[in-house]
Length: 372
Image 1 (cartoon, helix red, strand yellow):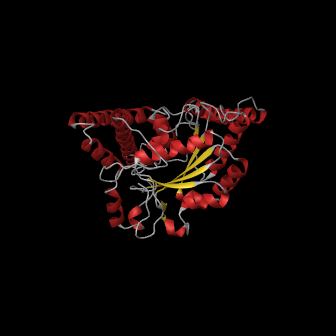
Image 2: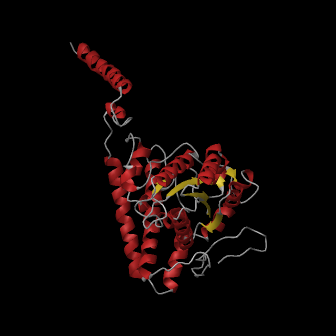
Image 3: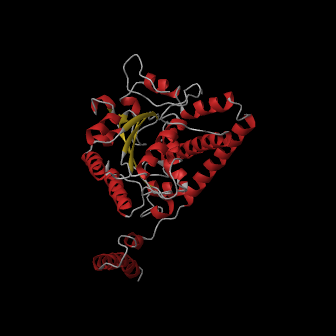
């Protein structure tokens, strides 16, 4: 469905309503079979369970911090499932659903937030770069990578590669993001900019960040922008797939604004009750991405109670696994921090490693002397 409301709100691409009704869109056709719809539902439920367990683990002192994706599952799963094996995604620090789609195990995410990893997963293996904490810098990284794909000649052919950068609405106020838009435009880079507009940049509401809808910013840089219902997994899948195909064919960047809502806190260090009304949260709960897909499956007769119970049981097993694996993560040896700073040997790193080793050994020497 594509329309403009009585309040003159921006066009919103929506294929699945909050009530579970399906509509077609002339620009974003999507054929979804029962098996794929059930698979998407499973993704949404399991990713939410991983997120719920991680929040609980942080509250129990097992994680230093956690950035919840609660409410944003459809934006991440829909876009993540649109990616091909050869594509590369550049996340911020909340893209746990995208990581799930790219085959990154939850324990790898937990290891970073537990502070027991000096890196994370292998980006080349998963097609997912490491999480980026600096707001907006991943947009530049993605653009540079996309320009490399372009210069390697991997466009305009079957199976060509594309790049996607994930960021929030707050990142659109950063210079890095706007510089990335400009670089991507003038170089016609094969990159999709995927903004999860969850309405709040920590405690800063959207109307304090932009006077125009975020997707419209793309026109000022010379490439298309589209706003999609970020709680509609079908629409995010269709729109992202189309944008990635456009990039593969050598037509340059696209900005997707996934209009969604952060139902939890910005991070576990945040208290959203101090800056937003509870009525706003209740309104968005009625647009829950999981509930609307379940409603669709039930109305279409594509899933029964046995299926839903089976997914819930699998979620329980995932929850137990996440808790166990988190607590079992080993602390790294102190000197491992120097191992993967550079790909090749580096005299400066070698010197620092030796100095730190001597420093650590001094404690052992002091202990031995004290025991004499």
